[in-house]
Image 1 (cartoon, rainbow, N blue to C red):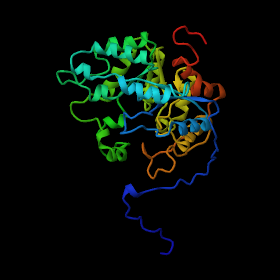
Image 2 (image 1 turned 60 degrees about the horizontal axis):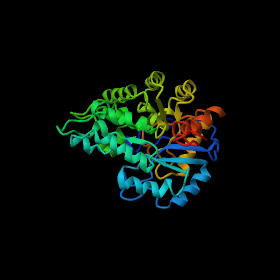
Image 3 (image 1 turned 30 degrees about the horizontal axis):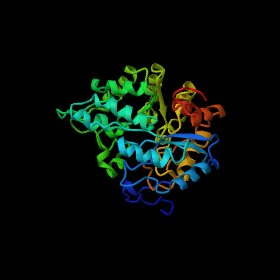
Image 4 (image 1 turned 30 degrees about the vertical axis):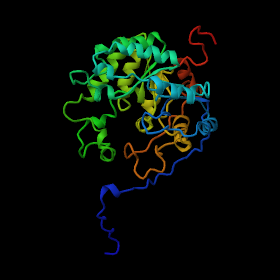
Length: 360
């Protein structure tokens, strides 16, 4: 019959690109409503063979155009590499960049965990403004017996306490998205991402579960109330905002950043907004966009400032990198925007104050 529908095409799912037919508002956005602090970015050469930013002057000009006051560089490492980052960014452009150091976990494998405190003291003396702890702690770092070292290992306690004494906030990226610990099968919502990056899967034998790693992160925060912890990527649990809410309620020394988790927050916008409303001084702006890109930054502005619904979190991507869904905006109130974009970070990072005297 002429009115019969055409046969369903024999189309592999990987080639399926449905086009949403909903007609919705698309708000044009400009710079951030408030000059902001990006607490989570990578400018060094730890994750690459060379500097992430070949032209620092061009980056500063881009920051000015986007309304970014300060960027935290999480790539400082230690020793000479820390000095190189401080020279290139913090000292060359005062107030625009703050570099965090790392800890050299090899001293744990060498049976000298006490050396971590001396490392922190040296890094603080050089000018590091915080500490970055990456997911290798818990997933790949091993001690002299070849056993994995988790964040709540008692041998690391003195170092975390020393960070607090030195006034260095500790930004911790523990674990990874929950799906990276689940079987790689037809039920895994990040299947395409894991297929593209098989080394991002941590569900194999001998590795701790996501739950064990998150518990370890919370145990560290609870055990060191004198140290401020920044839970990277929405407290390392963007898929479970009730758990993040519980951690923020239980631990006054914990704050979280939103870096690289718009895809998670934007598919639960009412719950995400309520988290910010319930903890107005505890959520920090971060992008984890490296190199910094105007189009990606605009998505952050649209997400935080507008009520737009059902839009792409990665414009231009043929397949959304973190999952096949779209996001909706939070439309935060002006006071909330001011805190998330800038004020909360300035408090945590002691910006605008002398770190010794505390004077303005």
